[in-house]
Image (cartoon, rainbow, N blue to C red; front, side, top):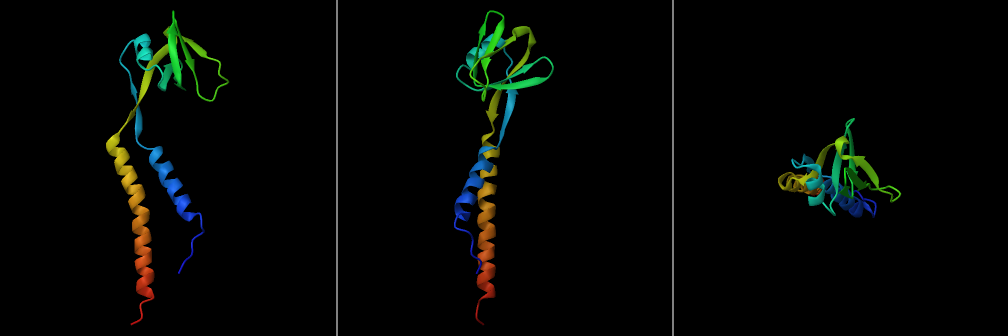
Length: 129
């Protein structure tokens, strides 16, 4: 019988959680003027597309006069600002529940099926006829 390291159960659980958490979301462009779009997302993460094709994921932001002021994750805490004329799009994260459930089901069922088949195979081989 094969012995697995003691952390294998925890490691497998961690891998399953990471795979399911990275899952099934996409970014959806908001079809509103920039000030309204930013105001509707106060306190939520969103993405800002600017001239030149750059996309920035931001923690929060607001519009002051003709400037978008945002705070980016992993920054030193100072806000970054963009002229509203340079902002091409505001994007919102959309989670697809059906795909997420499907990924979690497959990711959790597949290792269990493999473990069951392996245990059944070992039991069959060790059967005394």
